Length: 504
Ligand SMILES: [Zn+2]
Image (cartoon, rainbow, N blue to C red):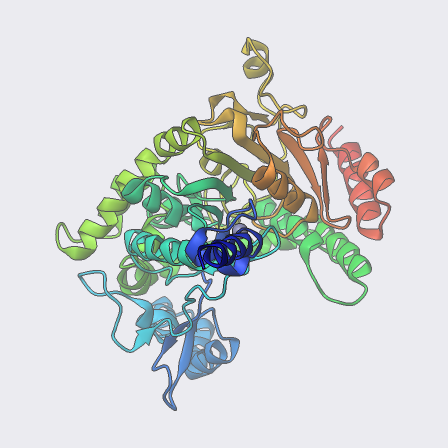
């Protein structure tokens, strides 16, 4: 009998070791802890009156809903424009903004309206895990990041129980970096073995800082460049390359003909006429109540923003917005502590993409959305399309962390050894080369900018080829065309050639 029991025990133990299905009891032996993907802003729909006949998705934006609202104010809008009545124009715009976004506003405690919800939030299910699968953590972007941190904490515990691992990997995209900041501040890094943060506004983004302090300006050069930089990422599904190249040429021609400058001047006049009213009556009462958006405001703008956005001096909403400042202030120290205790950390950010043209700080280099200096926790950067000044470069005693194109000095980052920079990489755009880097980060013994030969600190994204290659020097349209001969790259080359002739 004893022998039989021993035999059965042996068989059971062998089964446990071999089968991941037995994970929940004995722990999974696959050697790869599960990945939790912390999504970006808008990762789950925000819905009004979910489950009723009046159900309406408020976010992501529903074009039909926007157009219906626009139709309602169109007569008023047209009349105002024809008679140049800026008061009436302002009223029409405020009505329109309220109809589209009004129900997203939170109350003075920072809570959503009861009928505005996120009905599709994920709950971890199944035990499948590995390099090619992840558990998707989504959240209502409007709310206090600490609420997401608390949910993420429960989510992590559930994933551990499902998979039989005692640690997880966090892969955060864009606003996922805000959730990460709140999480590390509240719960630390216990039970996390890898942290990847892709284009995260860890120290905010200038767009939010400038918008929340009322600094709105249209700039023709920025608008044209923004279009140029976004064009390569268009997915028209048909003759992509030809359409991209043609649009690029068209945009260049419009800029040269002064059309874009004219449009900007018109836009600027509009902003001057009705901007103050739209801010006061619509943007502040709606977006000023969202702690999630406040989390994007960089520290240097914050106190001015509190005054400009007329944030109440106390109450739940005020407390939530202020509480996140601690998470933002401590993110560099929290990540450093995690790294020093063995967590593998990879921060990766884009640069040299023209940012949103709507703000006065349009020169700040970025991935088009998040400033490189904020995503990298402190890199010193040249302006978009420009290198650092010669004086700055010459004064550097050590050039180990200087990019070969002299646009970025990573030595001033919080974590210079595990922060990567990708030139011409649009915010969070999918790229197979970058995915390959992530896989190395998740499986490698050592993670640093010198650990992987094909992925040094400074990389250049090629969207057409879906790759990244090491940066070797200043951007060069001819070399790009030679490496990746396409219609778009030919047009780009011709334009840069013409530009160099004109500015000679
Ligand atoms: Zn496993």
